[in-house]
Image (cartoon, rainbow over all chains, first blue to last red; front, side):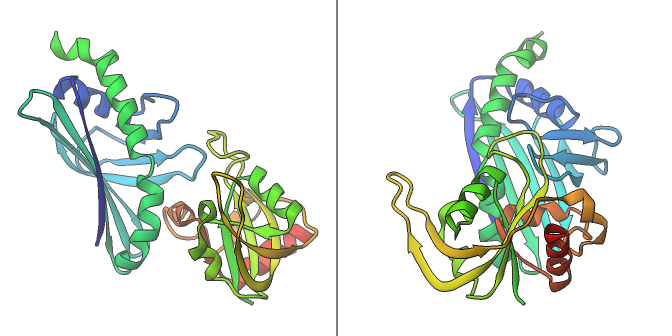
Length: 146
Length: 135
């Protein structure tokens, strides 16, 4: 298994971050660098979602974890490999919202392929996080606190 | 024939082709070192320019690795590893023109492998793509 993760904090509320994350995975682009998501059913565990990174081929994933306000994860299967993308949202001791975006590559050959493939995929995690936080701080913060 | 597929923007492929070199994975050495003299290198360009949102999705060049020398180019802040390739006279071929016939694209979510930057290409795929590019 190969894993990597990227964490950051924001002053936006956990609910605002969650609302932005849910909107993204339901098809709302959060910024110019967002991947495109197309949900094939309700925003719930088991639903498939088509993810199209900018300029790349579409991938078909499945939502595998969903704790509203806290955890979202989806999985993509490619050959013997399973790629699990997970967002975990937590409020830290200072009152800020911490978000951890992780990628786990498992399955046969993951130890070999992961170090080569993983960084190419996770390289834009910080950029995606910045767009998530910007969206949480604007469009979604008002609704979350009202 | 051992064949490789490099994933590089079309603009970068044109420069590599005009100067007769190969460069993959943002100038790192490891990918180049996997190739041997006589191997075929195909380039697939998902986009015209790096960072483009609009997809191009074309096979943009094919060449033969000329020798076993890998050198490091000095371009100031950027110092990529390169090796010499003799490019064939070809024209770009759209992925959609061969997608249904390729082993490369036969698996679900096949696009992930392109993120590796350089991947082996089957003999059958190499022969098919080359035949379309030189036609």
